[in-house]
Image (cartoon, rainbow over all chains, first blue to last red; front, top):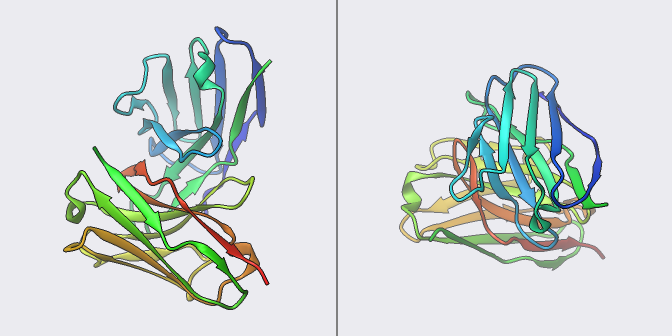
Length: 110
Length: 116
């Protein structure tokens, strides 16, 4: 079973600053890694799929990189609406199909 | 516009049963695999179950295997989760989620509370 670890648990930053979030897998997941944003009381929203592809409608300030076991989500300049919890997720691309989520990184206002 | 609307949540006693439904619209439901994902209060996301577009392939998380049953009705654009032998640790918001590779759309969720 693949385990995802996210760091840091909390990131305290100011609007306009750059945010760098890390996700590490216990074994290689190739590029099958996604990132989601979740705000309080809302469902998660897909930001990045296949490690580096922005989902439809996602602003260019969000970018993803990495492959294998180490991945990064970067928010180039934080907007007020970006303060939220971010989860990474890997999917198995062969049976049995399952999705595994990381524990999340909370980005809060400094 | 893709819409997923869950219903059927509520308060149930330990050992009880509940059936969740998800009404889909805005896309060709029969072409997509679907999932249930849950989130316990104040906790992270946990994948629960997967069903392929034709219902030919189904998978469950170990934590619910043997107790939960996922199904779908493509004629009604609906996804279901039958939950039996419910436990306190099943308390969570349950999300219906579409998958095209990764999970790309989520419903707003329905809260299931298991308590006496």
